[in-house]
Length: 488
Image 1 (cartoon, rainbow, N blue to C red):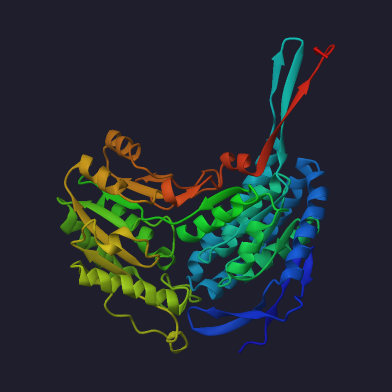
Image 2 (cartoon, rainbow, N blue to C red):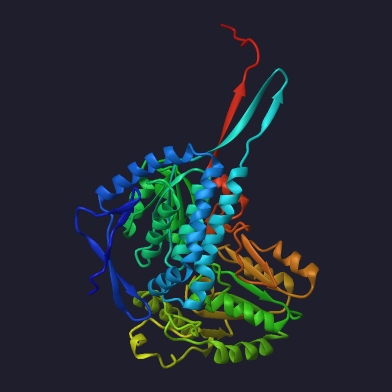
């Protein structure tokens, strides 16, 4: 057992709970505990809400440019500490260092930088009513709560806190109990950059802590990232106090590869959309529809690239590009989907054996990239989100039917199309029921681009100027310029 034990972060400093309750955090790549984390008890949670309210008064009263400068200072610190923070993400998540160093911290800093720059430009409107007029103001909501997922812990904390704080709100953030450390480091960076105490608090724990936040009447908004079933519970609970909600939920996204596509690029997209972060990405294109004319060539290129280019092993090794799943329980779940695919008649082309691993990683939760072909739309692995490195390849032969099949899902998070026919590319994308779409690309998510889902994949958007609306509210002010007319 590790002797390291971290506390919650409230009002600009670490705060001990009164119960002494802790939980263990395990390195997925070794299967061993790396530290303990104190659970937020009622004393911590009450203090977090109190400090967030006080912090909001100070922060929201600042000029937007002043807030922007402070957040820009946090961005500088994030970039300076990229390697240190990336290593924390690797130990918490099991993902490769080469990913965490290039994407996780960088993309989080990009989002805070984007909103720090955009928020000072928020403006209202004015409408002439003849003699009188009215104007509108966009004002912050108040105390917001963010609930994060375990696959991109620091990035998600930045994606939620960036727009919330830039717009003048305060935030109480609950990271996943499986990956809790990155958010604490972000909180310390905010404090160091000059964010006032109480503006960004971090509370730790599992579902009970999330439920407490979701039901608290002093919190104005919940932003949740996670799976659909939990999202529905969060939304139902938020309704009891009429909280605003943003939901970024799961997906079962289609990647459609037409016969004229650049197959090397299409294989790159399929591998990115199934094996990046060991497949633990909500937007992953796990239903790969390949035109029957190019299916054999596609599969040959795909299997060759998997064999030649996938390097599974110690995630801290810069050469590793494929890490460990988040937990033993999750690995068992993914294996059950693989077994169901075999039972239902899909053909497994790779992933039957795991490569030799370094001694210290042999207790880790590794599972090799797995590809199934001869899949049909009714199979379990084609219908349900697996959240692991399992690709389902499906045949198609005409545009109309593949669009219908791609949309035949309760999810609607993402979709991709590969074709060199520019008219077909846009024609097909416009008919796909998904909120994040790529043409001849996959997975790119710049800070400027709104992301979010259709159908069961979410509500609201994160990133892009669109998100400023989700962290502000409109106040209308009517200005009477003459005597008030009244029958009384």
